[in-house]
Image (cartoon, rainbow, N blue to C red):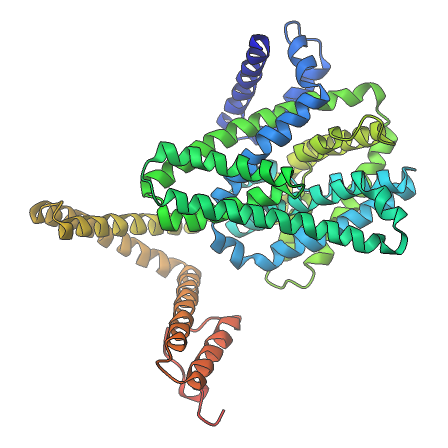
Length: 535
C-alpha cells in the first residue's frame, strides 16, 4: 500500500511539472501530458518501470478514470456551467449531443463492420467508444485564444450530454447485444426500452441528489462542510446510479447543474460559492493532469501489436462519422456560423472515457484486442494531431481571439457589476445597523467616483464601437422582455386582469423575442403593432 501511494505521488509530481511548464509557455497542457506520457512509456527510463507497469494495468487505469476522475471532471464542469448559457444554446447542444451521437454511432458502426472486418457487435462497441467527445483539450486551447464563449459553451454542453448517451450505447452494445438479437422483432423495442430506462433513471437519481443537497446546504453556512456535501453529491449520485444500473454520468451532470444553479441561489453564501468552486477547480486540475498523463502511458501498450493500416482506416471512419454527424445535425441552425461548425467538427476530440470503457470489456470479449488497438490509435491521433491543429484551424477561419474592444468592454462591465454589488452590500449593512453612516458615506463616495470613471470609459468605447452598444442594448431588451413576460404570467395566476389581455400581451412579447433584430426600447409598443380588441 505504501509503495502504491508513493507511485501515485510520483505520477502527480510528473503531471504537475509538465502542466506547470505548459501553462508557463501558454500551451495546451493536456496535449503536452499525452506526448510526454507516451515518451515515458516507450523509452526505457530507469526508476520509472514500476510506475509504468502499475498504471498500465487495465483495472488500475479503468478504475482511476471511471471511478475516481470521471465524477470529479463532470461535477466541476457542470458546477461552473450556468444554466442560462445552456438554455440560450439548447438547440445546437441537443442536436449535436443526441442526433449527432446517434449518427456517429450508426455511421461508424456500419463503416467499421464494412471496412475493418469486425463483427456487427464489435463494430457497434467501437462506434459507441468513438461517440463521446472530450472537450478538455480543445477548451484549454480556446482559453489561450479567447474564443467566443458561446462556442465553448456549445462544445462543453455537447460533451456533457453525449458522454452519458455514449456510455448507455456502449453498455447495450457490449452486454445486451445477444439478448436483443435473440429477441427477434422485439429486439428493437427491448433496446429502446433499455436505453430510456438507463437515461431516465440517471435523470431521476441526479435530480433527486441535486435537489436534496441543494436544500441541505441551505441549512448551513459552513463552507468546509458544504464542500464535503458537494463531494458526496457527485460521487454519491454516480455510484448510486450505477448500483441501480442506470447512467452514473447523466446522474452527475444533472446533479451538478441543479446544485450549481438552484443550490447556489437558495442556500450558498458568496464565501461558500467561491470556496466550493476553488476546491473543485483544484480537484479538476489534478484529475485532468493525471488523466492525460495516464492516457499517454497507456497508449504505449499498442506499440507491439499495432496494425497501422487498420488504425488509419479507423481514424478515417471516425473523422467521416463525426463530420456527417456535425454537418447533418446542425445544418438548419441558422444562428450557428459555418466556421463554428468546422471548429466543432475538428474539435470533437476523443479522450480518456473512450479508453476506460474499452479496457472494461471482458477478457474473452470477441475482437477485444482489435477494439483496444483501434481505440488507442484513434485517441492518440485525436489528442495529438487534432489537438495540435485546432489552433491553426481557428486562426485560419478567422475565429481568432476576442477583439481587444470586447475584452475591454467585458472588463468594464465586470467592474461596474462588482462595484454596484459592493455598494448594495454596504447599504444593506447600514440599514441593518452593522455599519455606521459615516463610514458608509465615505465608502459610497469612493464607489461612485469609480463608477463615474467606468461609465465615461464605457461611453467612449460605445462611440468607437457602435456594435457593442447595439449588442448590449439587444441583450438588455431581451432580458427585460423575459421579465415582462413573467410579470404577465404573475397577473394571469392571480386573475388581476382578463385572460384575453394577458394572452394578447404575452403573444406580442413572444413575437418580439423571435425577431432577428431586437427593438430599441423596452415596454414601448408602436401604435400600429398594438394588439387590438378585434384580434
